[in-house]
Length: 220
Image (tube, rainbow, N blue to C red; front, side):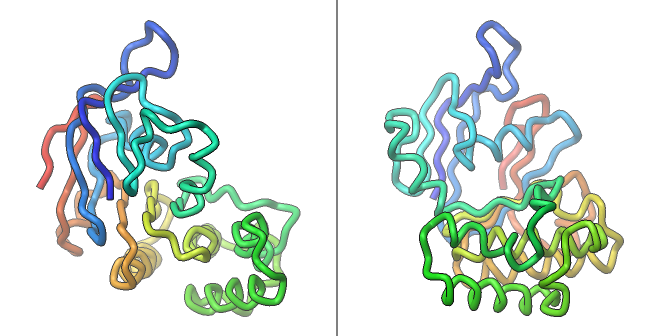
């Protein structure tokens, strides 16, 4: 599903690398914790895997496509197969909850009746069917995070990335969020969850990819 070979990332020429010498692979259908302290490079790695940025050096392969050699016209279709749950939600304030969740399907050109049905189904799945006509500002942080998850998975992504999805949630909401991510894994998505919460892998055991200072500290 994902292979990195000697990947280095610099945000500008001559700058210190945000990521350096990353070399690992993740199998399709896997669930992986991405661990490390703040500043370790977790968000930078997720941006690479989401194809929001490209590596400065090395070879990146995502879902069978050599990203380091691909033309930019090839990337949008590939991005549509990747779902992202952002740490800051990134919900559009002028759209209601239903339209926020339906947006990826609308961009992909899905028919109106089908996209609304799919978005409604996902809001039921995250327990927010009764809030679908509300604007994001009317929701709690935990509810906004669940809307962000529904939007990320409405197109049934092959690869699902979550950036600190429990950082602003209480213990009960955190467990609910992790269980929803695990359900997507059971449905076939490859899931990578970035967190600095060392207790989560103890409660929900899975392989850990650990970064320190932009380098791979351990993988297993």
